[in-house]
Length: 208
Image 1 (tube, rainbow, N blue to C red):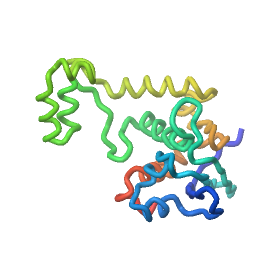
Image 2: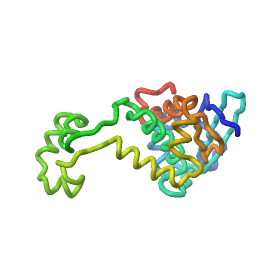
Image 3: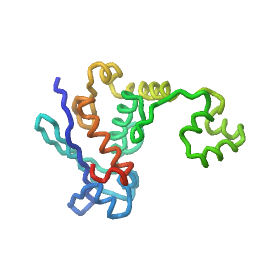
Image 4: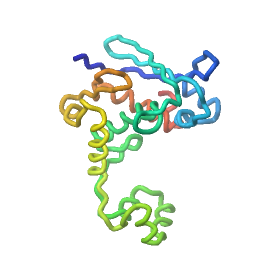
């Protein structure tokens, strides 16, 4: 089994009919957009090119239609990138971007008091309990982000055998169906994190 470590990942966009590739970051910035807005806007038609380098010297280019849908949900690009957000947050029990630890709260009120800006939390508290319950469930029930994260990861991995929590946690490998390779998780995770942070937090990560 060949387990590869990713040390470089770049995405370019080639609008349909142009034959010209532009870094996705530049293409989005030129239009006053963030990268995820280009990815998720179906009016942008063309191909995304993924340039992947590995520490063993291999370099590969993967090309897929930007608006290609994933098997289970969203676009293929979303599936590929969010996979690595899920792996990171499950493995390290923190939220990508803020590094806020996943926690257990005694109630929805306690959780939102910590997570929401003061003004938004005050607005939330003023909502009728019946409305909160309809939208979010009982505000008095304990909220366990760690258990929720574990369950989401379990369901996610059920659809992509032979991957499992044990392989990721104990052996440090994950089979990425998009890259069609076994990937060294801990050795590659920073590259995926930087890409995801750049795509969703352009103002802070322009140089990813």
